[in-house]
Length: 94
Image (cartoon, rainbow, N blue to C red; front, side, top):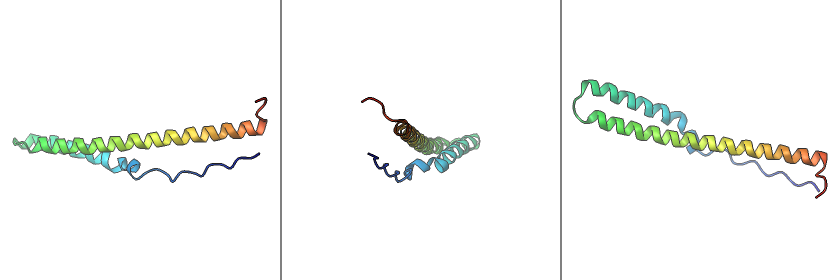
């Protein structure tokens, strides 16, 4: 009996795509904090640096989610290919 294939997932989440903008933005903010620190002796560069680090961390978390989703998709494709190959050759004694 042929089993129906599972429906494809809805795709990556919105959060998984945020890394493309947040990671470079966070790194740019951190770089701006370093440049600002050369000219400003107040606490502003430290606050700008902290904000840049937080933005970059959200970007890194988003990148990790994106890579996790890619890995899950690859595993599903490998499982499906294995199932198709086993169906094509016959499952053998069970």
